[in-house]
Length: 432
Ligand code: KE4
Image (cartoon, rainbow, N blue to C red; front, side, top):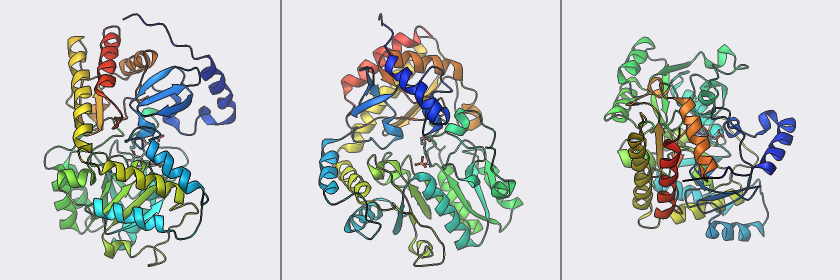
């Protein structure tokens, strides 16, 4: 397949200016394409599974603004609902019935959630849930897993994934030892390591937090028995189990990983999908724990724009769309076709690769694998991933700009989009 390099003049101009105005020219590090090389494209508009950049190039999108666009970008029904909501204003800073509606939908959907608090990002949700679990257990230590990312709050920037892994940052400067001295880490999928930490820190660990399917070290599903083992260990040691489902919530299943795998944590964090593309995060769980949150209880957490009526509106409409029969079967079907196809093409073109998918989330590593944890993931050929990413971009396919991220599909992706993507992938993998 002969391809002519895409014209990116306007993207380059805008990005050059941006770099003088904002650190790295971006509002979030991974967007700068640092680990895949080349300049990022500047978006002009999105619709369904597609992106158009400022030079008019069109792409099939597998990032979906990092997860929220699960119904496809700018879904007409979400846009229409927002138009209606806009007529009533943009922010209240006061109770609105819309918060009740989305809260009830989240509580009905997510097995662990009996009560929920809305915030504005996944980072805020994870920060708040950590404060809450420490207050409830009166224990300060937590266990997180290498390569997992729970937002950019100090306490979690220890062997974190996503942009921290992408940029190969150690643990970020500016984070005092005092903030991370209570953060213990273990390799993902390693129950023995968790048991050892509990033994070494008897009665001091308040909770275990994880991405139940890792997306921030690339796509790494839990080994059989891992989630169940954590549930038993936390019960045994009087610690709380926290599923960070900011990425997996309402994507892996309507009730998240906890519904699909049948393991119910004590607390859950959410984000991305529940905002339908507007800023929303949430944390929730057992009523006896959540009742400690101010003003019902003494644990403080607040936010000017939390429960924003526009964000609630977009989230409500998005979850309504996801409730339609066949949603998750369709996501699984198109994503399986994509992931299986990419692996098959990699094999046929002589590349060591592994990966997989669950529902609308997938990943591809350029290593023979298997990849059970972050150490395994780091064996990937990230330079080859960079060449793959650029080749796909040049041919109209937009993948996450890092080996240490997951890919996302949507209900708007058609079989034809997948076939086009695979045809392009064959061409690129034959040339890298
Ligand atoms: P935000 O603060 O970015 O809304 O959420 C933080 C967060 C928490 N937990 C999980 C499991 C997450 O995946 C995230 C954010 N994910 C990244 C993508 N891997 C957001 C993209 C970015 O940082 O630009």
